[in-house]
Length: 250
Ligand SMILES: [Fe+2]
Image 1 (cartoon, protein in one colour):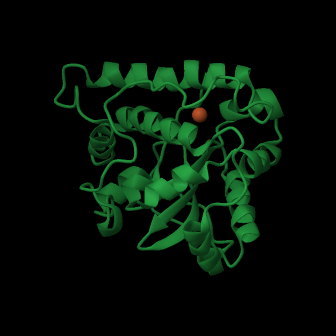
Image 2: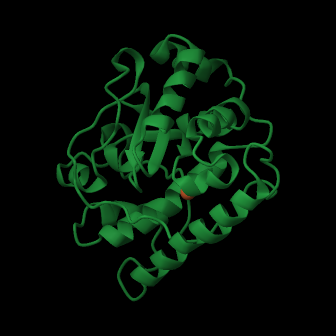
């Protein structure tokens, strides 16, 4: 059984980016940010086109179930997509049934739940749908390598070198204590590496996600056991979908 996300609101955010490496750890809860009025900032507000379109549903994987092997095995994807992701969908559907949120777009539900302290369970489940759908698209068979020139230039501007960016993303994945996510995001025109705890996600912090790595144990334990760093490094080197990342910047 998966650990239930903590409800504690740690109104503190650290960002791993450029010159501020080492002060990472994006711990601000979605709720604290939303309550502080920072959710959906000017750079990426509620009116922005959703990265994950559609309602509450379990999307098909964008590749065959065995296509990410050997980096991520078919068995991991069978559990991760077919059990964990599906459970978030089923729970969310149950929670919104008969409420004004039933039938709403997923992103609208995530934002509404983030802004309502009575909807922690809904936020956790709906956000995890969004996170997982984004994660599947952040990966592709034969991925890794480098992005195209425009995005590569932005990364080199933010991180000095592409290798430094990769090192920071892996470090974010490794250093997230417990469950969570490592992200490449854009905020205010700048690219950053951040990490979020549990189900928390950039879109409720005014950030635009470009790529993510799931660091919940269910994402890697069958294939790597406790070796989270090896999993993260393999994903960065061999699976990241730079086409998806570039699409997010429009
Ligand atoms: Fe996951």
